[in-house]
Amino acid sequence: MRLNSLNCLCCGTLYDDVLYRDIATRYQLEAVTALRELAFFLLSNPAGMVSFNKLKDQFRLGSVNTIKSYIDYMENSWLVFSINSYAFSVKRQQIAPKKIYCIDTGLSNAVGFGFSANTGKLLENLVFLALRRQTKDIYYYTTPAGYKVDFYLPEKRQLIQVTQHLENAATREREIRALEDAVQGVPVESALILSDANEKGFEIRGVPVEVHSAAEWFVTQ
Image (cartoon, rainbow, N blue to C red; front, side, top):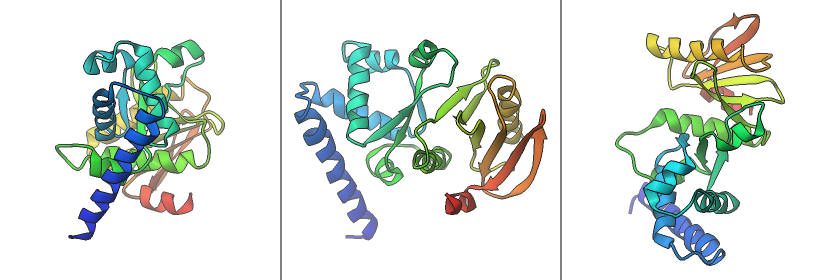
């Protein structure tokens, strides 16, 4: 048996232990199949945006509170993390879709399903895990015009975009456009774009923007 097959087996065993022993048994859940399907969906979509209402309908779990409880159980068992959209209103934060990150990208690869390598989302997941070791005060941000910024750290007043590469002109424009709109909506002192290579920094409305290789950035965290 090859090493990667052994790793997949170990991940699968750990995953089953968490679902059945740490969650289903501990919380005395009857809808175990729905729990497993929900977990599979979340792990198959690292860095994905989820709506509790849509998940409730998709998995027929009765209520939004049930979905919230199941995801809370997964977070308490260190299977996934969720972050809120940043807003000055706590109510708006609570009702906005959440972003879900896996505790381990290897687990996501072994247990989840995808038609492609999904390297961009896995990279974002890795960046989240690095940030999570430094602070729990992490949000994503949707600008007034509807553009998405991957992370906003209010303590540092920092915006962070993560993209696999910036070679594509449309990708570069999208990432920068979101930052341009975001600096007008939240207090910002700096911004960071993590990609595949270092580039010369620039400014947006007086806010310094650094562009760094994600690989090198990980080494410094």
